[in-house]
Image 1 (cartoon, rainbow, N blue to C red):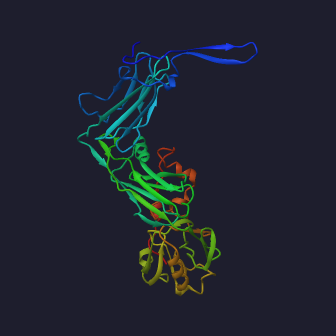
Image 2 (cartoon, rainbow, N blue to C red; image 1 turned 120 degrees about the vertical axis):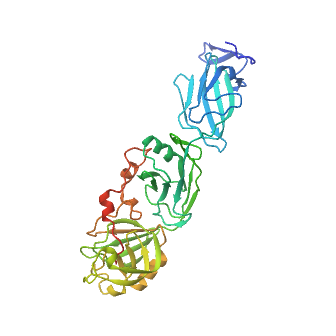
Length: 419
């Protein structure tokens, strides 16, 4: 085999054994092959999927590198102009490497291949090529949520796709391209709520004062037949203090913790029989100084003894269907003693104002010891934390299991505004 123009370095070693038991290694030859200058491996490599003559490569086809004439491949690194790596797999005998992740369309790639011949001499080949921009294709874009800003430790990240993705292999491509990085780093995973929506949360709440950066690497990536990813706006969340409020419905009290320290205990009232407050973890969705609450929105007939039409102040929203923590001056006599509301958590005006000013979007409110159902995982706010970590991970296309979204029964149980 001739690898011109280069000089092959052949190293032979003879082990000398001295009678006194001291051994040494004496080598003859021109030096260590690990320090030899790599030879040009062009003649020993072929690249499938990459055409010459200035013609662009088809991103629908995988990149393949094959070693010939007894050489074998030791390493392949392929990156695009933005620094994204192409995942690949090397055969056991080192003669073939092929890409396992899709190439991007309309992108510039640099491939660096390291080889070794039968004598251990190193070879090197660097190849640059461009991919074409296929026609007749559909675009898949991602919108991250919530808006960039300051949030509490319970805030999930959402990713809304503008097209449904049902195939599991295609979901894996999408999920792999959606990156969430935090400082400090945490263990987290995406969960497919349905064909067009994913949520990301850590195993536990975000660390206080963490910085979360979210971005998509889907631009130019083939997801499916004629379906290609496009650019998406990145997202940055700054996490504040850890604010967790725990409402014990049977004890008619709420304890508010900041960074693990009990900062205030508040007498409250929660849902009475037939209107029990949901158990479980909820995430603050927003705050409104004034909300008009009417019984008609929860299906209570006008003229019923349960009918109401009330101005409500210092309202902190927990569900889209209308569960709030709010001022309820009409029930002060029951707060701390009995549950008399229609599902909301009521407290005095002074306590509601303090709570309103203390919590922020993304903070956590957990209800325990209520006779109500558990908060829905999806569809009525952020009940994401009510799934165990094991069950959460089953909603990932990369981790295993099947997507776990809201059932029709869950949707039917969503209730509108209550007091």
